[in-house]
Image 1 (cartoon, rainbow, N blue to C red):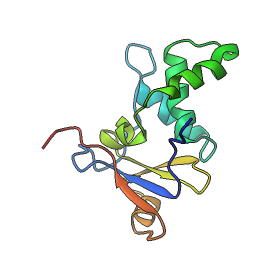
Image 2: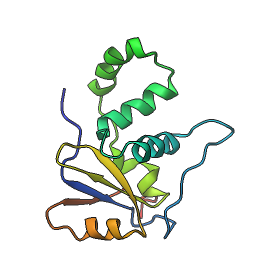
Image 3: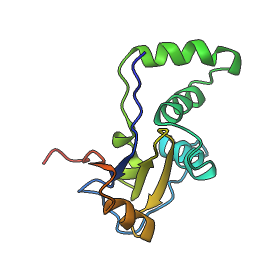
Length: 136
């Protein structure tokens, strides 16, 4: 299986992100949305999970995959191409930059924070932007 994680990388917010101050995603109709699950996982456990861990956990929660089937389902999940955190609404819509450390573990930083600016100016990191929401 191909490693889909980023290492020593900072994903800046999308050029067309509508907010200047990061927002916390909210559940809709009592259900956790994809950005809510991602936000909670990453903020409650900074630098504990890789991009692959986050992407699979969202899939597992939304599809009610029991713990005993997760290993097999994870293999199946990553046997097909999957979108990366550059496509996440955290960076596209909510104003969160995503830092991947040397082990590929992730943490998020509000676009208005000093840490965000430091990552943006860190020449030792690879820099990419979250995907734009529009096709312009």
